[in-house]
Image 1 (cartoon, rainbow, N blue to C red):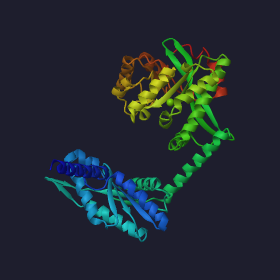
Image 2 (image 1 turned 135 degrees about the vertical axis):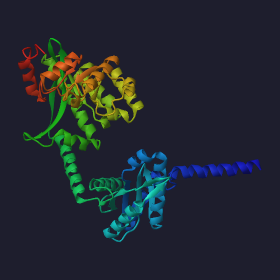
Image 3 (image 1 turned 120 degrees about the horizontal axis):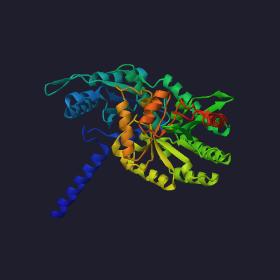
Image 4 (image 1 turned 60 degrees about the vertical axis):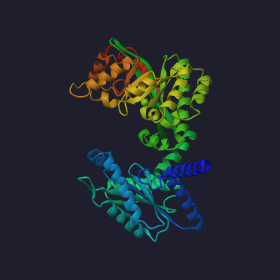
Length: 456
Ligand SMILES: [Mg+2]
């Protein structure tokens, strides 16, 4: 009897585990994992049979508001109700999944034409939109739906999801409760992005990339001293700007291309440090911006090491700037990387500080030396009613943690005076100089030496 009970219990446990893996615990409909498996399988089948399928990406409108106003329990009940409504409305062959907080997907395994998809999606919006009562509360739910089709819009599951997702965002932008197909407008955007990606790949070979250097100066009550520069990537072809970094960097960031660019920047910066040393300019450090993807790249530390060797430069002459978002995703992994970089002797700056999480808690854990206050704070000082207090608080926090503070985006004398009065050690901005091509940087350095640097 004991053995039999054991077996029965084991089977039950296995069933429960299976259920946990494939089904969403709250709504009891299939989860993201099931969705991915099924979508891959359906796409495989469709390509073999030369048939089509469609993906509906459903996102509830104002769900956060529902949660905030009626409480999480009401929110949960609403999600369960929506899951049931969707299930009831769909054909047997179409399945609904909950893939995230208030995100659902439907795989339509066969359909007649786009009109029938729109009709189905609009039906679902209507079904979701029926008033829902929780206790005495009356909730009016809503949803936006994005649609993408295989093979028309995408070649694989990953792309199909991305297209449906961006169509859903477009639906949101058109006002809530809308249905939107993945559109050629988005497709054009994607093609433009693709051109940038192809162009960038060639740019490295064709020598179209260049670094501009924005001076960084040590702020002292009695004057300044140039201590280095931030290296900033630029893209020119025949003397013309091909694309600006705020456009091409985010596009490159979507793939490993950003690492290739990043390594190019590191190599070039190290070579520049060595060159300046040879010309007896300095000592000057160069700060390089690391993209989140590159920060996570397993080659990073070895590559840096090899560059330091190759150009015979000291690790202290190179500084890396990382953003909060790169670190926050995986604090433990980040600490590991940062510790290794620190042990190599490379100093790390937290860039754009104050725009993201800005939490003291994680800063304490990280082996970093420098905090760069985002330009958005500097642009509004001095302003006693506004964020002077925040900037002062950042300084005192940084001091308490033993961090050097760099203020970027300094544009005028008043900002400078405020920063000096608040013990800001290092500054950067148009007040001193814009980012300059290397030749002009050298001119600036020699021309500005001493007169401008004499008095704050
Ligand atoms: Mg930076």
